[in-house]
Image (tube, rainbow over all chains, first blue to last red; front, side, top):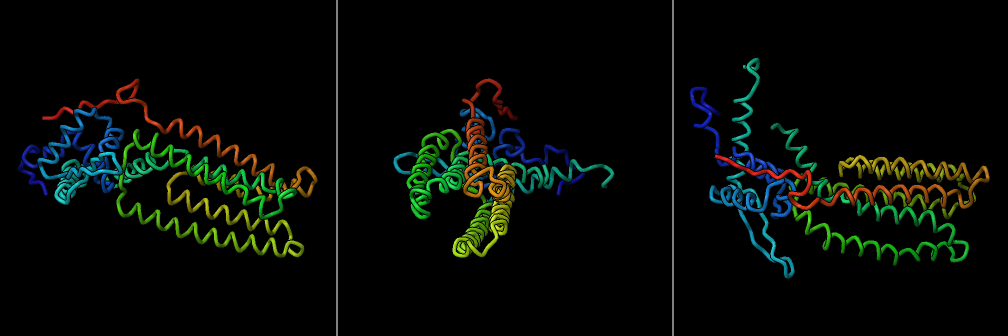
Amino acid sequence: MSDPGQRPDQWIDAVIHAPARLQIVMQLFVIDAADATFLLNRTGLTWGNLSTHISKLEEAGYVSVEKAFQGKKPRTMIRLTNKGRSAFETYRSKMQEALSDPGDA
Amino acid sequence: MNDTDLKRIERATFRSVVDSGLWDIFLASIVAMLAIAPLLSVHLGDFWSSAVFLPVYAAVILMIRVVQVRVIRPRIGVVEFARPRRQRLVLLSVIMLVVNVVALIAGFVAFTRVPTVDGRIVSLTLSLVILVGFSAAAFFLEIPRVFFYGLLLAAAPPIGEALFVRGYASHHGFPVVFGVGATVILLCGIVRFIQFLPRPQGADGLPVVEGTDE
């Protein structure tokens, strides 16, 4: 719950709130895992941007990056961690609460 | 950003992987068999007129597999779906199995009792089975086009039977009605496949999000 006395920047999760990272997290939230090519297609980000934002999410512990081989080809699968899933759910509920219609109060 | 939006994203994600048009092409090959087999049965008999299509199916499945691995996967990427989606697919598989067993039994009864069963009853039973199967597939895959295919193919046996009774078509009208159905489904599949493949990253019109933050 966001405290009515707090400014948004005090309770918004800045790691998730950035538009590009929000796209990535929303996409990963509805699936189990995806590779970088898939995220690239779904988000419209460039390779460089995607890599940067995945790194930031990984540093925060919100995503895990698993490198594996499928046959001879390397494949990097990215998935939302439990911490990331829970952070996104918290972010969602706080945003819904903060942006709810004043008439609902 | 409510649940509906996330459901929309999940649905779009699923379709972005599954709805490639390749399975439409496979379906068209099966429907084409229903159109061609009655014509071949005159020379090859009932069994061989159907069995001769097995290598064709194998070739089509092999082609789909090669296109998936060599063309689609490098462009679309790989995704593992969440449990609810996987459960829906398992449920669909079970329903399709039941529908196919019912169709097999209905077909067996129709073939073994042909002289005593009215052709209209056989065609209506076939229509019902087709409609149930395709409706289930359209619902669980969330691809409305599949329901249209169901209507198209369910309408085929009664229309074929009507053409046959009036003397406009041979073989209960199957070559005509299922030939038209196979052609429509094949064209839809080819158009869908062309639309499906993404354009090169950053090419005309494809949004490139710069992703600036802070």
